Image (tube, rainbow, N blue to C red; front, top):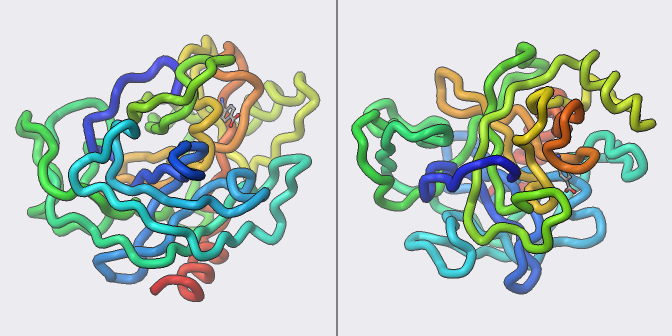
Length: 277
Ligand code: 4AZ
């Protein structure tokens, strides 16, 4: 994440780190299986897992140098890439991971009035949703993000939050040990398509969503891929995007590109039904 701030620990209860050995390489998001209070299903980018499954998914993490209290590390059983994922165009850059065992959701999270991510998780009962008293997150803090309705549209210029352990500047050497987040507005499809046409890259507005400031400065970057772009809604935070690609990071006039999750709901639900346990 470029131009962001340190996330409040566990204020993105759905975010996971995909790791090989002890090395973080991509993000992902935990999603709900019906009304279950645990989940073995993670949504990530297809390009993160196209060349092999991650060894581990780590949930409840904040500072990757030391385990956060309540952190869970689970092996990956299966990676299902979208059948129409195209590595040449990065179209349909979405995959579902089936974990070896389900990760239990935390009981309660209390959040202060900080920036974004003060979410509580999807479907958490109203009395357990975050309040606005200024106190630090406490307790076990793992839970699912909400999925959008099929075909749900995100209006242009909607404020979103992206998060991850990726590079904090373009061309940086190391990904971040600390979970970072930043707010970025969505960009209209025509504007996104025009911006990337100038780079010789085709944008499919049904499959892709753009977010960023015209002046640049705030963006996802390498290592944030697969992670969440969320929008605050009535039920909690909704996963509207999956960090996918860009030309550089945080450059003016070149918004980040995200897989448009609302385009894949029937496929996602089918995977959850098949592989959720
Ligand atoms: C990457 O290399 C990457 N600015 C991900 C997202 C963005 C750029 C690069 C968006 O994984």
